[in-house]
Length: 391
Image (tube, rainbow, N blue to C red):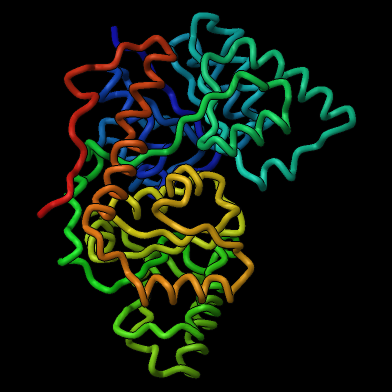
């Protein structure tokens, strides 16, 4: 009988989640660990249900958002679940995790913390609630099979902020779909095929993403023959600010572009293959998929130093530069240097892509997770060669 892996997410499941850890971990658990993969969460759209069915995931809607609905789900199904995968260090996670272990003592509990600077700053360090939380965390640390953070800096912050977890946290980064289970991962184009193109990928104009610092930098940078493309859904107020910049600088109208949302992974990969440079100026971030995917296509990276996984992804600065997110002049200077002196070393570009596709492959992460959870990985799948650099 196949073990049941259940990823339980506390937010409404959207299509975008299926290409991130929420959807990728159960998908890879099914393929690599031989599990029946469940994805449970509050109400999801018919499009999400259809996408889950197409990928072989069993969508289990909770009906509503909140602790009560999630707890009732665990009570109903907990004894059938072999691995319960929860997110975040939160009250809901503590209650659900301990409830699951009380119902199914042999069940494996995996907590993916998604820890970030923002979460650390919000943690209470004194008072009755903090004492109760720490008591529950100590209990959780004893019964959880696996607790992970996405980077070394996130692990250090988590263990320093919540000492009850000290020595219990493993580092497992987010990954890319190296086996192409959701969409084929194409080979990386050589430099000679790449365009003089820089990109920012994500929810464009959302305050957390801090894309205004890029507008300020672009107002002063000499783009020469380069173009800058914002890839993703665009906030209305941000588009208005961008249009004001273009009205003042009509010479930039053909050089600053917006694609809007791209739901087709093949189309997204095409943009990333064309580009040479990616910018992520977030005010805070854990381990963003956009950063790893950009590196997987051989990009040089300009990254906010408040992104917890930035040092790991850039390999200590080898493949990118870390910048303060609120310093437009620093972003302008870094952009200008990248434009004036773009990567011309094919071997270095190949090394960047290989670093991302091997170090941050979902197949590699799930191989480790399976071993820690006592689930035997399928050796005929794990270690399959990820996409290469084409010539």
